Image (cartoon, rainbow, N blue to C red; front, side, top):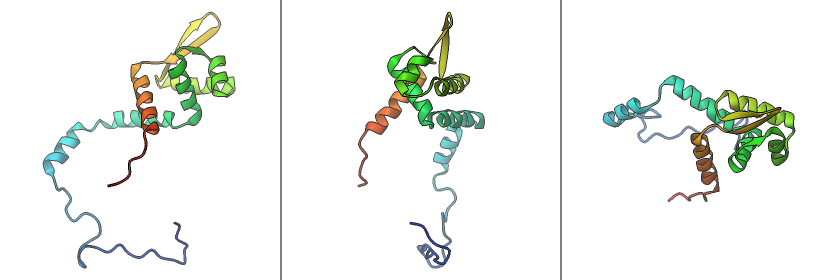
Length: 140
C-alpha cells in the first residue's frame, strides 16, 4: 500500500498518551545482550559474509553453483549447457566465484574443470535449497 503525497499515515498510537514511540527501555535483558554481543562476528567477518550472500543472490551465479552441486566437476561448456546460459556469462560468474573461494579450478590440458571449493559451500547450498522447499509455517 503506497501513500500519496496528499495522504498522511495516521500516527501509531502509544500504549500511554505520554509514552514515546519505540522502546521505552534500552536494554531489557543485560545478560543476554552481553552474551549475544560477545558472540557476534567481527566487522571483517560480517563484511565477508555479506559478500558471500551477495554472490549467492544473483540467479545466474546461483544456477552455476547449483549445477556444480548436482554435477560435481564440470567444464565451462557443460555448465553453460546445463544452465541455459552463454559460455561467456558462465565464465564471468566462475571468475567471481573463484575469486571469493566458492569454486576451484583444475586444469586438464586446454580445459578447465570447476567444482565447489569445499564441503561448507555444499552444505550452505543444501540448507538453502531445503529451506526454500520447506512449506511456509502459518503464524499461531
